[in-house]
Image (cartoon, rainbow, N blue to C red; front, side, top):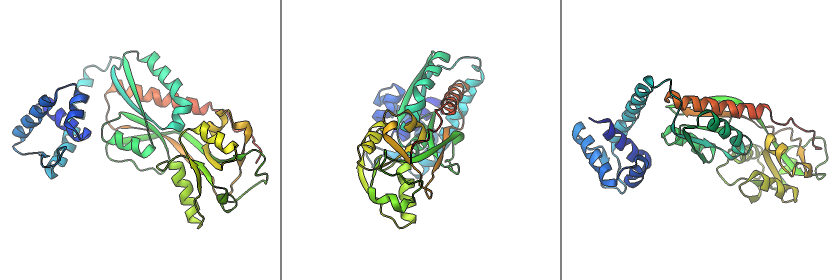
Length: 306
């Protein structure tokens, strides 16, 4: 049984495509097919259901896939054992949600490039749950996202918190002048939020539903600064991490609304594959440190009129 054959099988299952697996391993499709056949011959069983297109792992194939992932992690650890003094090189696959990337990504990437010049960092963006799935499936080495402190991670994924972020409700300056409000006072104005899939939006929707209040979306769009500009223009209320508001060009056109029954706090999570080569672990640790430093040094909350 050859490691290259195991690697090919894992790539096919992970990519859900022979062509994409070939691309990821820089091989031809026939070469991938030959390796899968060799792997099945060594096992004495079929691990792919070829009646589907693309082929997918059968019941035994799913069990074999999980074991193969463990084998490859052990092989990587063995290789790392004899190269532990080397600086990391190759590809570092990183995932970042936009609200963290907007604030911390540039400085973090600069530090990684300065410290590990031979490392090629590839960055993907997405919702936090999507990035966790990609780490669990081996598509990313590490990711940062915002989750509650009670977040439970899947098998094969470990994580730690780097800090905490307050989410605030924002309104056009001077429109909501009372010292405090309830969600019931706000919900009828409608919201300018990220599209469905955003954890911030889901948390707000749950809070409203818990009080029997309607969830009115006036406009959904990506981009923190665009959302804040739309809120400043009077198109609805916004929900934004405080550090992003503090850095926005629209911050002087907005007020933080003191909503006494809705004060969400989220932790900044650094999520990674449980076992990484020490070179990549160095990169993950440096990235986490850079993100933590950036948010530690974030501009403190200004007392925007509420």
